[in-house]
Image 1 (tube, rainbow, N blue to C red):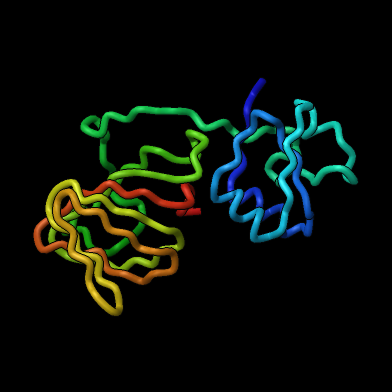
Image 2: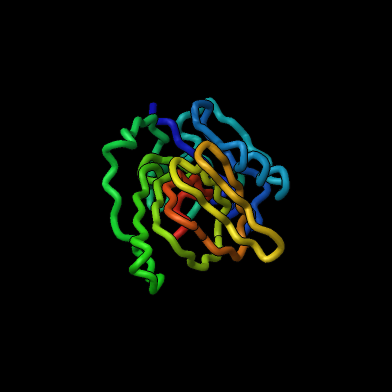
Length: 193
């Protein structure tokens, strides 16, 4: 029996339709953020022992599945993975910054391709700074060098081993006086879409 994974995005889609309940299988996984979103939206999550609950019940006894599932596709189950960070090949940053001298490079390593609601990857850049607006929540772990996150009201200084958190909606400048390599973790995983 395939487990299904439901995320906050799925619950928000259900809430947008005005549904008040959602039926999931006994073995399905619903993320903690999805449970919080359901509680906030007053959506009742019902676990059904019937593995066909997603497809066999009428609209009066269950809500429709989120749009990406209505075609009969099932959400990808999350899978455990191990990434050898030393073997990750960094690529030029795909977003035009107009700062080629900074040699900004990145590599996404964990994301929705693994069924994960969060993403992770590496970013490195050389001396300089560039502006960025976060449309997602992000945690940065400084691996090497020095990372400064300039916010309107203050600057966060990160050295190897430091963890920085920047909330969604923040307008920042990524800065380094020398160079920096970080591991970033984003929510949601598909932050660039």
